Length: 337
Length: 133
Image: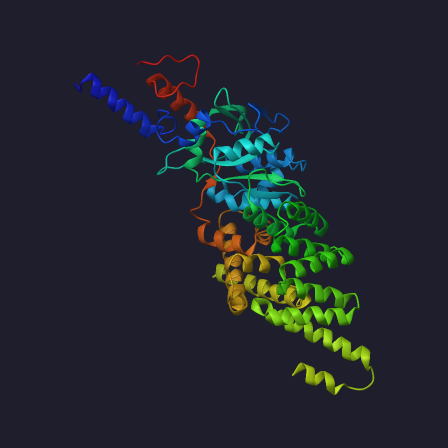
């Protein structure tokens, strides 16, 4: 090859970019980094390092279990990576899927909240004391090498993130490098929190999704704790109020659940809230109040209509039984249509 | 053949399970239903039966794939049980192609590449490199 020196340099540059694609020149698509440089987010410390985050060196392809174990440990829910491996590692894929990273966190008592895919969110979460699990693509978009790492801090002056990554306990990764490898992984990240704590950067939708999933397997009182803190932040949410009410109900805390359902029913005039209030009142033997609530639920219609009619029927049956235990009441049949 | 049997058995177990939960708490509206309704997924009650069936299929499918990918059967059923309906559906569709994070050698590769780009002058990561430019 008798290439022109300039041409050769160009070829080398193209080759390097194609090979790594990881850390080309700063002007190449690292918009987030440029924004951070020109205007660092207000109200955040210049430097954060969550040094108390435990470190589990990765074995074989087990970066998923290792990363999750570190995040769980930092949330006060220490779980050995070997135990997590059985719960989330997929031998046939030599790795761990995103969905199972999230279920793995929940199975060990934590909330897993997806956060926005911005560098700003990474700064905010670590500054709030929450390590962030990120999915990076260390390869190329067409030849991916997926890897989970834990962001444990940053240094604005050095323009770098601090990570626990694979076998490296403290990796200093330039903003640009993380931005690019993270973008190639779809900018996917989540935080692992004990119930009662909220993510610093996640919105109402992401938080609610995490909470509803958490409720399905969590002990009811823990779910209630988690819902309560979210409801304080977003008091206008019907879903959060219903989640709190349902969790309290499942925990057997009926008076508290009643208050929650009653407030939600009045505030939102929602059929689901009236229906659940009616059931709870029925269980507590306050049949007339229960019937009023159930009638409101039926009148509102919507997708819960069948359930509400069911509730009303049960209440009326109980009312009839308690009003005239010996003879059958024809009045009731009329009310039923 | 065995896959079919497993699928059938699972389907029976999961559908009867769904039925049981329904009768036990028939009259309470669960939080998931409220969340779905508030996210605009209306007309759910009409599709309820069908979506429950789909859900059961998705779960049976995921369980079978997990086992095929080397998870032992008890672990696999626990893993399926931990999924929400949405997650089960998503996973059923992408278990073979979704990103599975696990690479280790690549980290060394990254260092190597950064070293090269440093030397070429595109980056300045390592203090000991001197750009050729």
